[in-house]
Image (cartoon, rainbow, N blue to C red; front, side, top):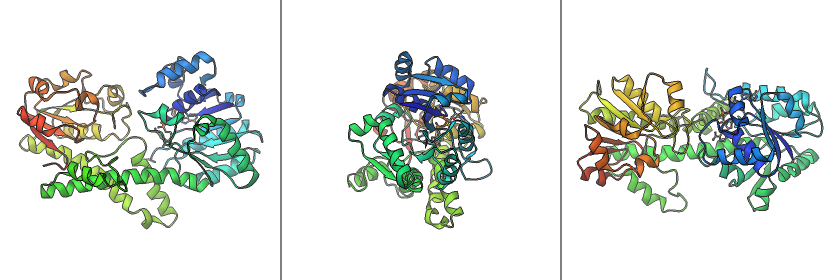
Length: 436
Ligand code: NAD
């Protein structure tokens, strides 16, 4: 099929390359000329495992091109909207200007043979208002939310857990479903569940899923706060409740909490939209989820300050991690970088290291000191804090090797990803999140 993907960021670039890999002819469109130049040269503009390989593979087939020229959408009949929906600067709601600009840019090229497929995460009701504009051209608009995880984006795009189609009622919806089934023929052939529903439900599925995940993380972080007041161990608590299959162990890792380009802004946008709908009280708990999440960053900072005797002024602190999670270079709303910035603000000599995210981090926080080499970051450190659970810190850094480099013996485990006994055994003072 002939597809266009408008917006080639973390979602769109992976979607475009994956669809080409599956045999479709794809044109990716972005307003960012630098990103387009990299993608056109077969290079990934960000770190995402497997993306370079599928870009190269699809590029060789001639089925995948990238451009800044919107008129190239005329080459396609199915158009995916994959632009950003960040938090607005003046509040919690989602900024829909990019989605509106993408749809406006598309309108002149649409006719009754075309299908517009929204993938961006949007507040419920957005699709219905855009659908009216698209309908004037004779084309149909559907919403097909995306659930990919950065770090596993290619796999999640090609073999998702489920497909959700939000389509209009009647023949238009049935026809759109047939077209989407053809786009996703490989996944459907592999038996991946597909839910066909209306536009509002499809929009809500995405934000509800992220609200649930955020709540699960903040739940265990709330338990960590209680553990800290009682001497209990939140990791053992999570193991124990996680054996109950109704609860499950995943997303019960206490630590400095969630971040990234999705969960924080999605729960805020959901709250804002619910308030507009007069249903603010239904999701008022998400404000507490957000507050718990942000408190844990401050708690990690407090562990460092207390561990260093009440002040970090002039102390060298090795911060291991900058991306919001491992296997990604994404630093949007990264708890790891936030902790580094807060420690710097308290007067510490912060040295941040990360295997992938330093370039992005430096762009946003040029005043911090960065070292790509982990051991250089550790050298002479008065304290060490792990804030992103990369294997380089979690598995590959031995406590004795770290001790041979650092000057101090304080290790703060912001992700509860280290073995306290192993670190204590060679003389470190280990402090975890919600662990005695
Ligand atoms: P991103 O910022 O990485 O990418 C957005 C891209 O859109 C940028 O490259 C930008 O230049 C481009 N763009 C903006 N306006 C444009 C226009 N008018 N025409 C063409 N291109 C335009 O964002 P992202 O992380 O890829 O997220 C995109 C959407 O997908 C968001 O709604 C997000 O919530 C959702 N989402 C993201 C993920 C994820 O893991 N990143 C997962 C699921 C859903």
